[in-house]
Image (cartoon, rainbow, N blue to C red; front, side):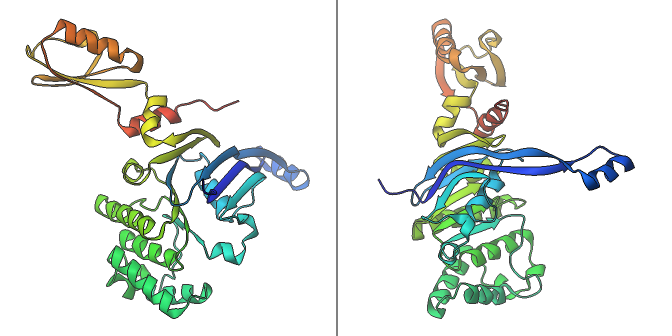
Length: 327
């Protein structure tokens, strides 16, 4: 089994946050004796990511996702625990490590605002000391994949949010990184642009074997790209496994869709009726009761068709986030 590209063991980040009561007296007192409290942003998390994996890193706002990505990118020092990416300790910010990874944040600009993206790309070429032939080949490949040939000649400030995100991604990948930390890369984009970015990430992964850790609030991103997800909440990992297995662990219900020959029969006694369209009725039932309710329906009615469906992934994730914080 190959060594993991990303290795995290008991990784913890604690912030010391100053606090004081309101008022002038409290402000004066704080000048001489500042009171602080610990905020545990990330609490002893552990996981490994293998070569070429695209892993969804999910959690609500404040769960610790961005803090974790910043520690893996070397932008934050961990309080304790271990993190290694491509064999490097990220916090050392070694040149060789920085040449092999990138971090893209959907709500941050990295390119120069007042000049065309092409000029910023040249600056990145100089920073990463890329050979011109290699740089031009990679630049042209990325420009073609994202269809930004006309956009890279315009000042970045003249681009729409979606256009700007595409050229930002080109700039972040010019040095052909092996590891991508993507923090909400499709945030604020319309559906068409989101799909274009997803297709690009998938194609880059396929062409270059890159390892990707992706955060997103859009479940369409996760379902399209990630076979595996890690769910973090209150700084702790609640789930790490196949996306398809998430519903098995956390879904509280399933939906039975049934078509009856006597379509008008009331079915409220079997569960919560969530859809009633002509002959087809959908009933939401507790997961543990699914088999029993389905058997009752088949025994007590003339059933023309019956299906059992998992809840939408958004509902499953919401039930995960509803888990109480560990004490």
